[in-house]
Length: 195
Image 1 (cartoon, rainbow, N blue to C red):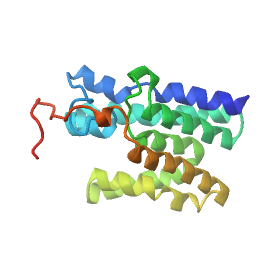
Image 2: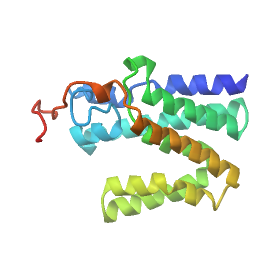
Image 3: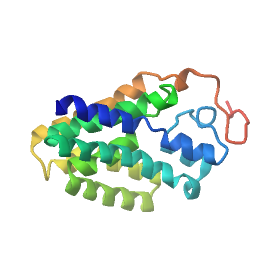
Image 4: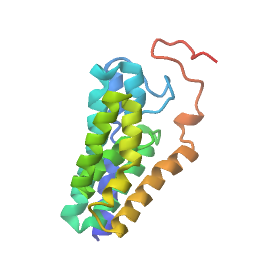
């Protein structure tokens, strides 16, 4: 039963369009600007960090809460199922007409429930690289280097399960959502991007 319930709870949490709601509060429709991705990164590019930070926290919280719900319902693998549900919900949210993001931040939040020590090391690495180079490089190395760090703390079976979650991110880049097939994007000011 928990193997069914955890992904459903995760999916519903993941379906909350946090970044789109944050942007809408500032008069920006993320489905019409930038890369048309209603996720935290597009919110950052359109709003700046001082207005977009709640989108990062919210998108991460969806994965964290889904993982914690899975742990409460069962074991660590039930938590993985919950995080997977949240990631799918973020990509194809029922509350946003199935127009979602890529689930990178939702994954990032979920790993704090799945492997807190490894997540802490990855977050510290992310922060250091973001300060030295750029936030985008920090997130890329922090997120995609996470399984390597996780090998220091968890058995290989759990690292493989993390790889399965990361595959969901890769698949989302390959499978366009409705937002990816819409009309050409514009900037937050309404102008079409340069060709």
